[in-house]
Picture 1 (cartoon, rainbow over the protein chains, first blue to last red):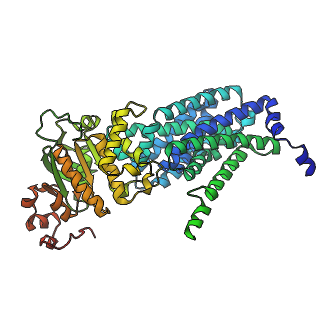
Picture 2 (picture 1 turned 30 degrees about the horizontal axis):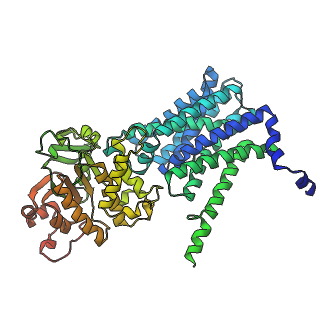
Picture 3 (picture 1 turned 90 degrees about the vertical axis):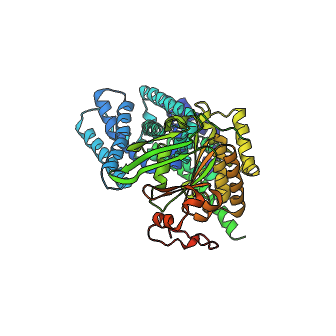
Length: 289
Length: 264
């Protein structure tokens, strides 16, 4: 142990992996995807769309498989199925008496099961484990390109509609009464969610992508009362935890997706305990003076 | 006097509703409801829960499409009037997520969004409008507070400030007096009078009759349709109120007794 500490140098811990091509790629993609998902996570947590995020991220699965089978970019298939699942949820909700959370659970597991069946039936070189758990260390150049394009689209939309989306989350009635098209914002946010889920799939996989879409927002929400600051904190914490997760995964030889999400969860726990105003320890102190 | 967004072709009616019918999947919520309000008046919209008050509001804001009838705001159809920033809705406190990370200043600035560019970047004139609106509701010192840190009455004033900043000529208020402190109530009474003198039209949805008598020039009694409409003193008769509230005896009309919450 002492030997390890003596030989441990933070600089080489950070720099050494950069000599590998695959690590440079993994770190860049993870940091980028982390930032993008972190940005979106603010809207997901404030709108109360955690379950929706879970649903959409699972529902993209058959889309990815079909797109691969047809030789299309996987993001297109994922996008179609992501938005389709949401439209289906809305349709069933309108036409039946079943409660919304039940329908969400029903639709996303249905889509996910369809994806699993398709993977087993369609002869292709898709690795199920890569879709389910992500594989940032083995990401191909064309996937990197696709992820950059998706991230660019998501960030542009969020930047342009930043204020409108905030208003839509806070007070949709007011938004409508001043002539803002809230229906458009609703579907815009859902489309962005589908795209971000596809991007996140690259790094942490379908199962864990919902963590990328809510944890950074939840963490930032505990740390500030300002929306702009919350956005900033979510992006930073999400990016850093993604990059850190990849490093830890490399040095400790553990699963990358799990490693990234665990770092995010750890940061959340830290905020949960020690946040200046909303942390657990702070509120206890103020109760017993 | 404040600027207001007034694009009316003639000044006759701020709110013009003619034989509105609204039904939700076959259930009639409102039928043959007609109402004309000129500029510069305060009108109470009184009825029980489920009598169609909120449906009427929704129709005026374009959230539900009447199956029949015609609505004009400042002589314009509802979507156009909304784009002209003519209508402001002041919500009930319960309808707002108080833990949302926005400051009072940002909430009032939301009143300006409809007049800004796509990116909603505030100009100097927007900042001035927000500052001025906050001064009028006496919240300027609290402008940096998160909205959740305000009391119920202060929050109500913040949303009134948003309507002022929006320069709306038609204000729709949902239970404005519920859960507010005395200071806010007095301030709101003064503000409503100022609004009236500025030519705004205020429609107050409530089941609190004592406030209607104190503040409103006009009153509309509704129960699925407009039962009675006119000067408050003329409309507030025991017969009309019995009709509005079903078989309940309106003993709260007999002077000094405080208003009874008819929904409890």
